[in-house]
Length: 133
Image (tube, rainbow, N blue to C red; front, side):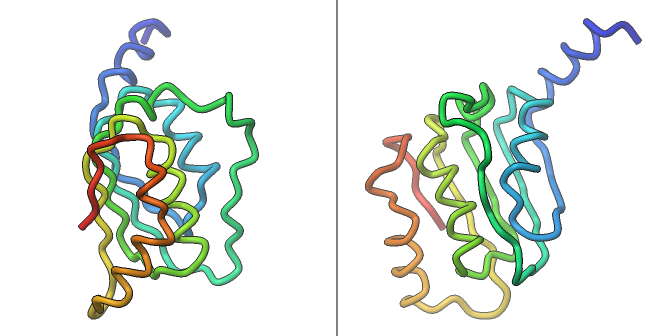
């Protein structure tokens, strides 16, 4: 394979499903650099109580693919701080985000939904059209 063709192939990927051990923002951003034109992102994370969810790069180093992402689905969302910080990154930075879906285990109470909405700072969102389910 020629490197130029590989780069074009990576740019052509529109949907990506990632499974990770905990909500690891730096790891996900590493994938997004490889696939800069993603429109849909599915992330399944296992529960990790000791996971630190830190973005180590400068805010000016935000990647091109955040401008294309329209849909993010977070599976195994617990509503705890690492999960909230992870989701909040996309809410505050993905300018074309239209829908963010949270898949939780068990029942999701109205109180949990209301608390999550406040924690995720939808009022400060990058995209004016984003909604969550």
